[in-house]
Image 1 (cartoon, rainbow, N blue to C red):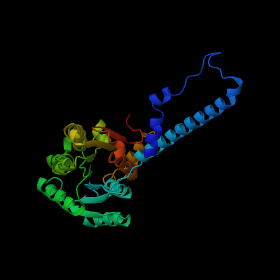
Image 2: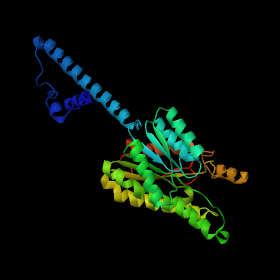
Image 3: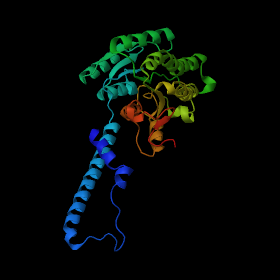
Amino acid sequence: MEEGKRAMRALTPTALRSVSPLPKSGEGRPKAGERAATQSHDSTTNSSRTRNVLRFKNSLHHIFWRNTMIDLTGKVALVTGGSRGIGRAIALQLAALGADVAVNYQGNARAAQETVDAIHALGRKSISVQADVRSAEAVEAMIKQVTQELGNLHILVNNAGITRDGLMMRMKEEDWDMVLDTNLKGAFNVIKAAQRALIKGRYGRIVNITSIAGVSGNAGQSNYASAKAGMIGLTKSVAKELGSRGITCNAVAPGFVPTDLTATLPEELVQEAVRHTPLGRLGTSEDVAKAVAFLASDAAEFITGQVLNVDGGMIF
C-alpha cells in the first residue's frame, strides 16, 4: 500500500509540471558538446518516470484484487433455516470464506448438527440454535445465544421459509397465516432482534432470501408470493432505516432451485421451468449461496436496498 502511495505521489500534477516541456522547433536546442550529457539526463528521467508508472499500475492491480476478494474472516453470521437446502449451502459458503456461523433450525436437530459438523470440518466455529422465527421471544433468545457463544453478530441471512401451495379459492386461512407468519413476520422478528447487535458494531450485512414468485407472482402460491413480495418491501425499508449505521440490507430472489420445498412438484412443471430459463438448467443451492456471500462481503459495501435475481434469466 505504501508503495502505491509513493507511486501515486510521483504522478501528481505538481510532479508532472516539474518536468520540462518539449522545446519548440529550433528553440533550446543543445550545442554539440552538450548533447551526450542531455541525452543521458533524458534517459534517466524517462527511466524513472517509467518505473513510477509501472509501480502505480502494479499497486492499482494489488489494491483492486485485494478489495474484490471475499474474505469473511473474523465475521459472525446467523443463517435462519440453515439446516437444509439453500440455507445449508449458504452456511457452508460463508464458513468456507472464513465466517463463524450459527445455524438456526425449527424441528430437524439432526440436519442442523450435520451442517454444524460440516462447518467445523472447514475449521470454523459453529453452533445450532433452535428457534421458531414466528415467535419474537424465541428469536430474542436465539440472538442472545449467538452473541454469547460466537461473539458480536455481523451477517444475518433470513432464509427460514415454508410453502402451503393451493389455489386461492381453496386455500385455508391457516395456510395463508402460516406462510405469512413464517416467511415475512419471521424475517421481521429476526431483523428487529438482531439490529441492536448490528448497530452496536456499526457494521452489518442483512440478506433476505425472497423468490422470483415475490417479484412476478405465481398461480397457486398467493400466500408464498405475497410473503416474498413483502420481504422485498421489508428489505428496501430496512436499508433506508439502517444505512446511516453502516448496515446494508439486500435480497436474493432465487429462481427454480430443487430443494425439499420443491421436491413434490410434478416433473412436467420442472421441465417447463427449464424451458423458460435462458441458461437452460435449474438453479442450485450453491448458485444462491455465492450471491449471498457477495452481498455479505465488503465487496458489496455500497450496495443496499437491492434485489438480486438468481434465476438463470427467467425474469428480466
